Image (cartoon, rainbow, N blue to C red):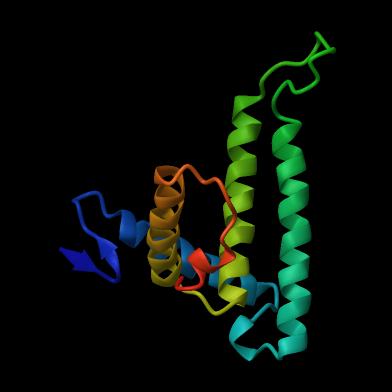
Length: 136
């Protein structure tokens, strides 16, 4: 059964993603960020803001794992790594919303891009073809 663009296999994953996108939009509005009112200039500003925030969250995720092979004092901070992944999701959802994408839009694009990635692997991915993702 398909509901809201998601496959319903009993775990309500689609509803969870929809709920998360709704919560993210509410948080953005609370902060005064309302993507549906953006001019192109504002949209560009916010995509860049979120891209920078994503870079910082990735750096924080990296710092949660022992990446310094020369340093013996480092330990895996699994709890913080998990929090950083959630922080990344916040900014990814906000970016998607800034670009006018719903949870269903992201899901549909993911399915298409996943198929492209499998096709690339099936073909040996010996060359880059930017056109293979134009349909997404």
